[in-house]
Length: 254
Image 1 (cartoon, helix red, strand yellow):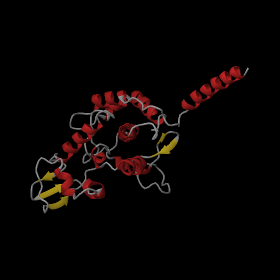
Image 2 (tube, one colour; image 1 turned 135 degrees about the horizontal axis):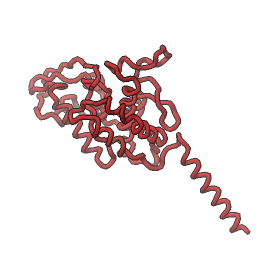
Image 3 (cartoon, rainbow, N blue to C red; image 1 turned 30 degrees about the vertical axis):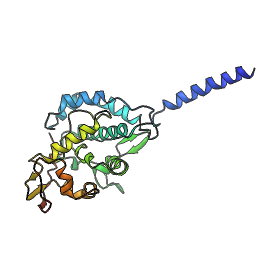
Image 4 (spheres, one colour; image 1 turned 180 degrees about the horizontal axis):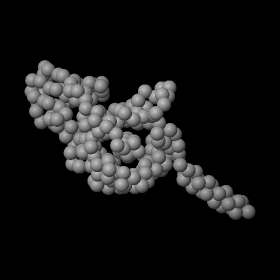
């Protein structure tokens, strides 16, 4: 009799656990596939990061399906590896940024978007909570500052996330994946730092992106800013080089 009761309890426990696991808002036991996002990027982003938003609009159903998979499979910090979490959050930031533009297209600049009415604590479009992760309303600001910068302490994320603007690091035309994320982060760091349209580097003088001013602390935790740049720059910069920052172009990266 006890054996039957045990089996019955075990059966209902499995059913209950299965139902709970499928509820949107709970952390996913395994990361969602980024395959469809990779396909969207390959189809609509050029090698230099120019984005075809009209193409994304034509494939909006596919984009929305991918975003739904992100929303319903929040990272489980206990079971997902750091690389799985990092790839998820970078892809989420980029994909929801694309959604923001797609939903409001045509637009001249991402800075023109955001809530129509003034809302307390909503300073700009990055604070606008227009999507959910794990059942919780979220914003691009939360992903960037409360998660990516705070939890990972990885300065190269600044070259991986894209703000839909000309001066931003180009949107990589492939999804970030846990298995390749180290090489991908190195790739975007080298590409951005050596891009003469975004950084002008000589041994004695550098005119660099405002990103290096806004987030200087992220780049100088293990040395000077020039030490960081020299890890990726083709031109070796002298330690006493003159440093200035370029104006930022917020026009759409179309």
